[in-house]
Image (tube, rainbow, N blue to C red; front, side, top):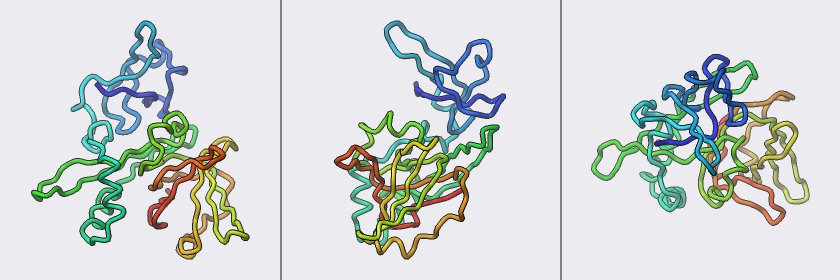
Length: 231
C-alpha cells in the first residue's frame, strides 16, 4: 500500500497535507498528488503519525512514480559516470518527460513525468529516477543526500554571480526561505540561459546529485544545463 504525506484535493485543485485535512470537507475527494487518479484515504493509528494511503497500486496512472520502480542510485551513478554512448542515451530516456502542468488557485504547478527504458533483453521496463517536491526536500533530505534525484515544484529563483570564484549560483527559495542551490562552474555558465526578470515563482524540474555543505546548506550538483528545466 503506497503512503503519502500530501494529497490532491480535487474540488479546489490543490495539494493538502495531514494538518490541513478535514473529514467533513475532504473525505472521498482526495487523490494521488502526482497522477491525480488513485483515490486516497487517511490512515490514523494509535501511537503513529497519520498519513494518506491508496488501496491498490493499479489505481495509479502507469506514469506515476508510485506505480514505477525507482532505479538504484548505484545504477544511475554508473550511467552518469559512463562515457558509453548507449548509457548516455539511457540517461536521456530516463529524463524524458511529458510534463503535465495544472494551475491551481494558488498558482502552483504539479508535475508528472513519463519514463520508459530498455533493459538488456530489449523489452521495456518501467523505471523512475527518484523525485521529490521542493516543499518536502528538507523533510526527506537524510534519505536523499548523495543520491541523484529530480527536484520539482515552484520557487523564486535567484541567479547570483560569485566573481572571486568565477562561478554562478542559482538559489531556490520558497517564501523567501532558502531551500537549495545549483552551483554553475565556468563551463556550465556559458550554456545557461538566464530567466527573464520576474519576481514571481517559477515552475521547474532539475536533475543532479544532492549534497550538503559544511554549513548545512543543500546544493544540487548538475552535469549539464540540459538538466535544468523551467516550465
